[in-house]
Image 1 (cartoon, chains in turn cyan, brown):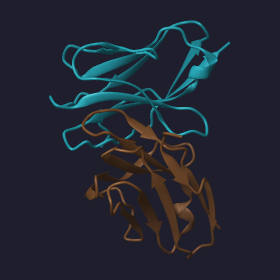
Image 2 (tube, helix red, strand yellow):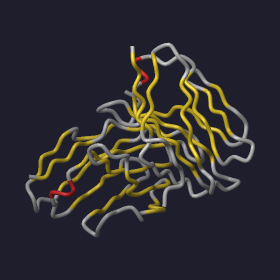
Image 3 (cartoon, one colour):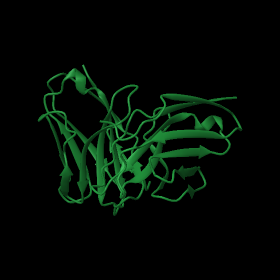
Length: 109
Length: 113
């Protein structure tokens, strides 16, 4: 039983913004929303996380819906190096960290 | 290097052989996770440690899989009597704990022939 639902794949053009959606309708009040990405032949890499408020860091922004049942990872200007599989994960009070299938992002030059 | 280190990077085992995969987490990291990733799939959770305590081992696929972290730092994932379906990349991650970000190693690619 997946906790999060993401599209299997998305495409973007280089230099354009990318919005990667994630649905988590069964989220509980104490679950944090984490995003990781995995480049080919590498281990996953942390991108960003949040609880209720929108978050920004040097890599991306995280927009969290008011009811917290969905979130969107925003890459402001996609580059070819951003091509990866992006995973949206809920981390609960047990510190569980389980991955779904993720979204494969293709960036076209 | 200050990152998570896994060894060996590659391991070829004959079916029925026992293997041990090592994970050196970032110093001071309380939480440690193991994952199994088959080709083209997302990482599948295997087990989770907080310090030396194994708090969740619900993802271990069979009793052939065993993980330990006796002193709360280095962890070893052992697979007994390897089968072809055990072929995968095994990932280790560590975290300071709580809801903080986790850092992953490069993984160990296990091929069972």
